[in-house]
Length: 498
Image 1 (cartoon, rainbow, N blue to C red):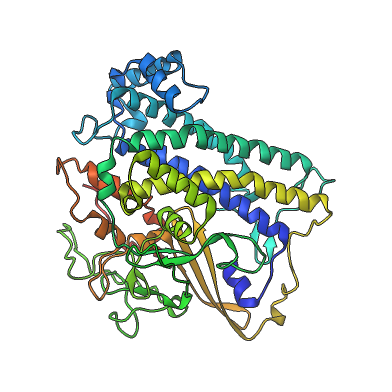
Image 2 (image 1 turned 180 degrees about the vertical axis):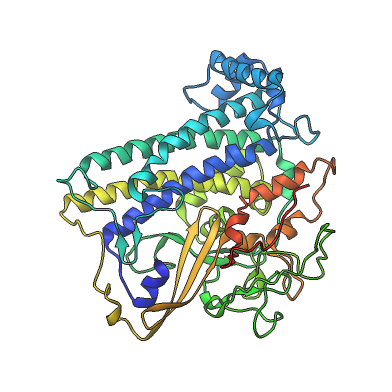
């Protein structure tokens, strides 16, 4: 939407901007909590160890770090009983794939039991709070109500089929519930777990370059300047300088990716000139090892100003911190102080994980603010949700180019569009997973995942838990990073899982 709006010079309405901010905000909060508990926590938490915990001591631990209501010995004993039933049945269900008993686990049994209990609580919590997304966006995680020029959801205080005082009150109720869990469960758990793994503040740094397009618009035009989360680029871990974003510096390299460019694979292309031509040259059955000196990935090598660059919550928090964002500086400094580490610890696997929690808290704090802004607009009589001034393609220029930026939960998402004669002539999206999982480029620069894994200590090569910790800290999404479609529906590649 933003790319087309940029190309055609369309300004959205106040209500559309605010609703987009709320949708993006609750997606951050829900997605980050899901990631911490359900996709990443078990890299640090030994579920089976929780069976050895004393529920009374677990309750004391939980009560010492938070006043969350579910912290009684009876509550933790009940959770322990559920885990015990799973273990004794031999069918661990949702906990079946862990490396339980791995020597890299450090938490005491009571901390493990507390984390497992909150893992289960988060399942119910996230299912409830994401109703905000359903109300405003109709679908999660891909909202259906966004339109070029605004939103498709009606605003009318006198209609039960539109956003009204009742739905605003419901949004505020869910936002309050979202914030309470983040403040009283997620952040205390994050700090408790991190305190046992401070050595990971020196592991998994990666490439040292960080990019954010900025997000949560403060006006109806700017996508990168007047935003609540600032845009910028940090080079080589230098927090003393945040460079402005220049979209012309984004390129896609296919030197080590299974694609081909019509004019040669040794030169990167800007997305406006981008091509996606699959060219698989990898191993054939029986699938011997990849030759990483050649092409070895379905992900393009995405670069900014020619540099391998990380995107995501850590990038956003670093850029906000270095840009002087008052609230984010306060929370970052609080976390660093509680853990007894300095700002350098942010450049790590642990820092990446902590940054996601920090971002969740500050975003959860903003949800009621944006909802109040929306309520004030409705109360003032401003019900405009869409700008249709340039809805007629016959009024468009013969050719137009545009770009639209969005900071998705996983990081920088860019869309570039070329419109000719009222039709899309070229379209490229550069997604967060593509930035972080990039292969090496023509210069031999490693992508963020690859660089972050260098020198990672591994206690048991057959159970590489430490590798999972770093990769999961990025919140990987390979389905987003790779977009290959065969119009004939032929098999492009067969992947064998070993």
